[in-house]
Image (cartoon, rainbow, N blue to C red; front, side, top):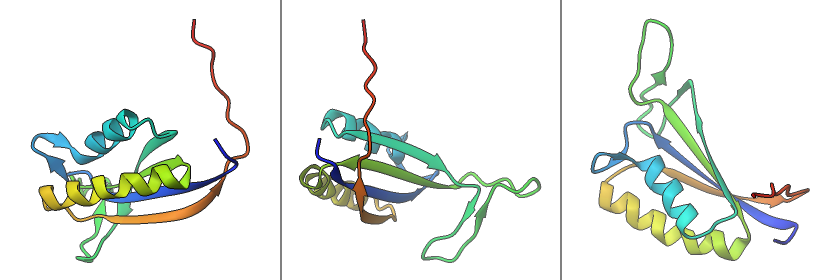
Length: 115
């Protein structure tokens, strides 16, 4: 992998699903299937999207639709090739999402030796 890469960041809601499967799981499994370099899902404690409806994990306000951020890092070509899949997925599921791409510089990759 080159030192220069792209960070694909996808903002979704916890309640977004494809059928009965959370959309973040669908995305992570597809990223793995396409052999992208790495992906992580982060769960937010508070946020809002285009509807301006606040989703929060506050003690007395339990939300079942907390914000999630999926980050995928890989070479630019691989990231660009993944975007049509995401567009189709969000269209099929009628889910809202925000997708951003940022420059990323890979400093070091540690690979564990599996025996």
